[in-house]
Length: 338
Ligand code: NAD
Ligand code: DAU
Image (cartoon, rainbow, N blue to C red; front, side, top):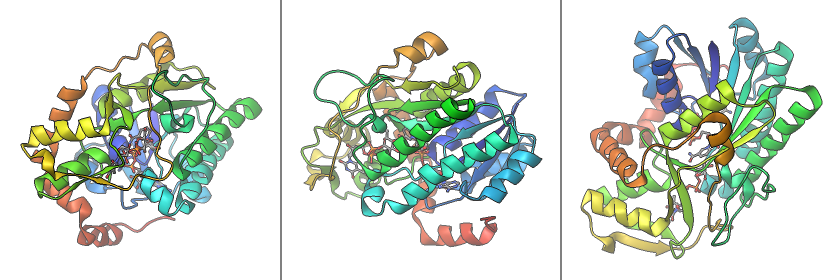
């Protein structure tokens, strides 16, 4: 099978490409990524240099001509769309790029795939489309969409467009909705890598509000397996929930992280809350368990220790993705076809 993976130079896309090429000797992958601040081509450089089943193209999923060219000319069998603006805080500062990529870009990809008669299309969405939960209950696939941030509204927009493409055109789209991922290659604007960096530098750890908001954490490889199962076994037109069965308050995550890196809790600083901050997420993934055989494998404490060990061993990566020099290098290295 030849897959078009979009956003493959980001956190989850990088892990997905590595895992799929290692697990499926008969798969090849074309990675289309715009290389925004969150995309790092060096994540997969070893594959670019040594793996004939991997190919990289820099470009924008909003670019119709480019996407038509790739889908038409490269004999693509299926698409997995990870490309997105993914950070809630950035969406609060400026929603526009979120609408452009997450809604218009996703629609452009689906339209091009429909016109080219490409096979299955997995659209990677999020639990945040459901909004927020009170102290009990879990999101199911029939929970009404009620997004609260510009990020989650843009993701919900694409989910509804995917639904419409299935209902109107019988376009073979499937949706995955997953909870908070953690693991190697996560950009240090998200809770775990940001807190790790600050702790190592003995800087304050900025916990929003009272720190009692709850997230359900899933190790990134478990999410990637969920996307793989959706692609290979899912029902077209269906959305599937994925989660890690690991509900934790933010303050508890930060305390565990501090104990792993051996730094004091006095580094914790409570700062102004995020506007519209969702209180709690929890996923009922029984549909994915029953229909796809999905189950998360890594307990949170173990996964967190493994993730911190990865960051400890990859300080150069952390320095690189934060440096302006690296951005200039990325921009000059390869011309964007956008
Ligand atoms: P990320 O920000 O680390 O990576 C996003 C990637 O998309 C980057 O490589 C970026 O360069 C690329 N990109 C952005 N705009 C693009 C465009 N217009 N054209 C082509 N490429 C573009 O994000 P992530 O955390 O890896 O998330 C991947 C997907 O999974 C997103 O759709 C996100 O909504 C979803 N998701 C993330 C999580 C999580 O916890 N991180 C959980 C559930 C779902
Ligand atoms: O739930 C899935 C979503 O998880 C994905 O769809 C998003 O792409 C991904 O970014 C993530 O969104 P969150 O907003 O939950 O992740 P973030 O790491 O930004 O924040 C996790 C929690 O930690 C959240 O309650 C806000 C809080 N937080 C975050 C940061 C960056 C802090 O308290 N301080 C911080 O500095």
